[in-house]
Image (cartoon, rainbow, N blue to C red; front, side):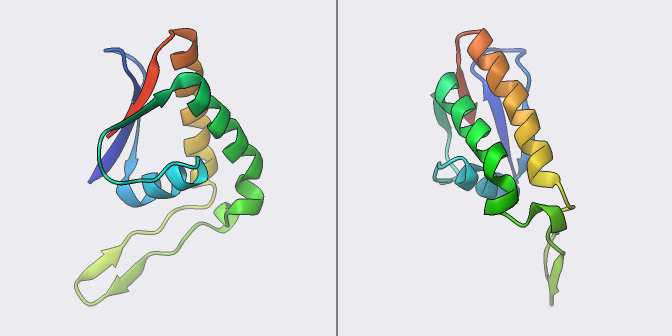
Amino acid sequence: MSVTFAPAIDGAPEVNMANGNAAQILDLLGYTFDGDWTEAPAEDFLGRVLIAQALTDVATDDAHGRPAVHERNWTECGRRPGYLADRLTALHRLATWAVDNNTTVEWH
């Protein structure tokens, strides 16, 4: 399953990521991930992205990524080093677009 972030306008840029990665990003942004559709004012979302970008190096171990975990029939995929920073950069572009176009940011 995945989560898509997008401004509330058709044809707007989108950022998609797996649920586990989206949950960690949303946690960095100060939102609770409940798996349901949610929206936020673009200015608020942009501010949270900027703060998360500033704190990524001290709030996460993004520089080392996360190894995959395999246990019997269950696998949790890993995450490459720098993934969170890359996704936050994409969300920064999306949030700036949303602010410039006077709309909200949604995720579901």
